[in-house]
Amino acid sequence: MRRNLLLMVVIALASTELAQGKECKGVNLPDQVQVAGSTLVLNGLGLRQATMLKVNVYVGALYLTKTSNDASAILASNTPKQIVLHFVRSVGGDDIAKGWSEGFEKNAKAELPALKGAIKGNDFAKAFFSIWLGDPPNPELKSGMLGGTCG
Image (cartoon, rainbow, N blue to C red):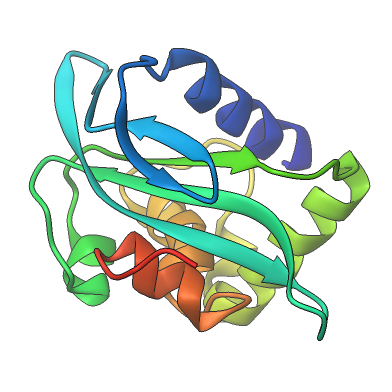
């Protein structure tokens, strides 16, 4: 499962068009991306910080079919959406996997037993996106991705 999650982010990063859009901490992300035949618009950019020293780790971009600042509605929707993570420092794969595992545990603990193998419906997407839109590692990340100020 860890490899699949990492692969999804790599694919998301590789498929993002490099047109100029919004900027956060020197990272420019396009206003729109094409995903599976759908045009998604940039909803917002959030900054992931770690440790009590608030070390910048990555800028997260949330793309939706229509902008929204309602995390619950975004998580409940079955429309195309994408999160792009642009790392601003070197982070090992084990650290990424650990962070995602902690995020799943924190935001989708009761659903985890059902989220194995092939997953039909919106269940996995809801659990995955809740890492950033549920109870994220730092509140500024969620706020920025929901259209607030980045950083």
